[in-house]
Image (cartoon, rainbow, N blue to C red):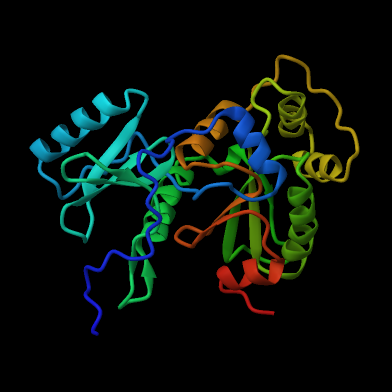
Length: 276
């Protein structure tokens, strides 16, 4: 039978699924190097309430908030499927029926085009949020020869074994290819943890890149003192907005895919349009 362009397939129905993860769950997910749920993005400043009429959006908001008062809804918009609307909340992409009776998560796939529309949406939102971060507030590893032709933005925790493994690849990539890697902070145990303290020390070091390499190799980093200011809060806020659950969490370039978890450097280079 011919496929219909509006076919809503391969969706895992999780009615009234949890919308937020606790800090403990974030740490648990990070220990595995991958996310325990579909990672995604949202931005409170983004005008995502598109397509659906104002009355429809307001009605859906009211009904969802009545059913789940803890929901922090960033946007509601149409999908290609009649009667199904997209909801961005708590760093996640969700879907709701027109009567707000069913809320579910999963992937919306256009089978005729072979496109995962949910992944596309997550990537768009992630780039919007990451694009608002200041490069000067990140620890940047630049290419050894010539200007960078593409880049990765990586939310990292120096205690994560997968981040340590990725960093070994990073040192090779920037040595051999015209790419750069920008690190943002995501201590999985939270902003008040010892890992967060070390990450502050890394950012405040005279040589942040060297301090990052040392920390990921298990070496100590000199204390920066309490009067050193860092972008930790901004990085944590951005991570929350794009649904980071674990580390490393990689955003490719300005418009590439998002990668929750470690990937070999050959795969990352291919995503950046660099082929060995």
